[in-house]
Length: 479
Ligand code: SF4
Ligand code: SF4
Image (cartoon, rainbow, N blue to C red; front, side, top):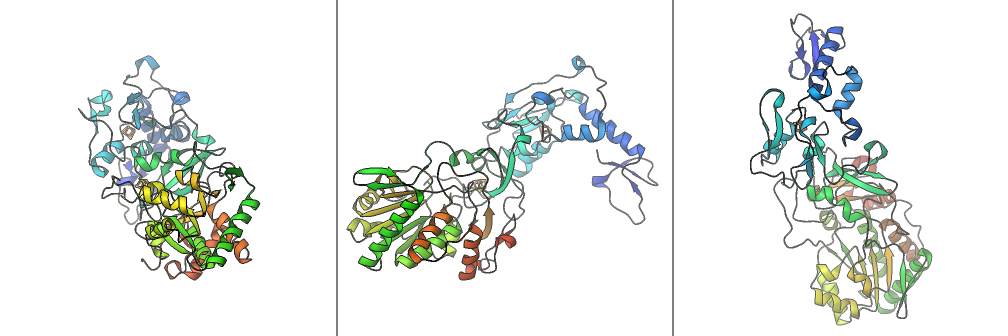
């Protein structure tokens, strides 16, 4: 397709692999060039099925786009005479193969040979019967298998999860960062009318190149659906009653302020997980300073968490490094022990499920003993059952903020969809609590909270949403 007409060269040359020379004159739109481009495209389409109306790639198919840009002629090959191959053949948990549509570009074969080194795919047969297929005895089941769908320029390899769920031209895209491990792969969130349809990798040479892992790709499912907290709740006697934000924030701020005043430093404990954004951690630190509270961070991952030496990190939290850069270490156990001893008057849990992430029995004893438990979370977890107040907060796909990945790179995520129910962004809820406790104005945006963090903390100094851009920047203390 990139054939060009170079003066003094007897034949057309491929532009992608021809060195530029002094005085070279190149024609890219001459009649000779255009005729050659059309001919190549016709060749690619000789045995291509007429699948566009039912093909899931329609809307993001390079072949379809090139046909419209360069060809637009009727096929000279009658349909029955085309070579037919296998259609809709599942070749792995995430990928389905339609051999007829393959243009034999070998991108997918090179990916499994050169990137994952798993070699599940290869070409077989000869001439116009060449077909892409699984290598004997293999299944396309490596941790990065979904990437072959992204790099296939046509509808040969499609994603079993996404196919037939939405036409891409109906979807909107929002740049973000995967929150499923500490690598922080850059992604695009595809969404429509408040629903997320898929994650796809976004190029960032410093983080994930062009790729993402399958677990991260499918993690969009955990962000939506059943189990989300939708409304603020406060405990009244033995009952849990729904409250307005104004009333819930007022009650929480009033209670925490009273307990801190009455019982002095250390009466309140705050535990934040490494699922929280840098902005939230910053506001929690200010809250802790105001309440003279004990503050601890926690980065929990399943004991058998997978990892490799490419992208996947064993730390399944997106912001462990961000917590460390703000000085939060993992002494959450001490806070829980104090609560279990009866030394704590109030405990604030921010995106933390201590019943799962700490010693279960000790955690439950602590939650039962503490007189005032405030839970800020997006998910309905066991901790909610012990809470005196529940404040529902948005996921990273529903709000703005930044994570600092394992290498200390600070990266932005942006709101793709609105939070469900009455849930609000975490920075907004914490800003509201701080405003009630201090009388100061709440930060009007996540960006303003980040600005304040960058002013206050040497680890983030000089950074702003503008300097981070869409691919992030190393935290100054790390670089
Ligand atoms: S990337 Fe797609 S078109 Fe290219 S060889 Fe693989 S299946 Fe065929
Ligand atoms: S490697 Fe980590 S950050 Fe990257 S896509 Fe997978 S889970 Fe997400």
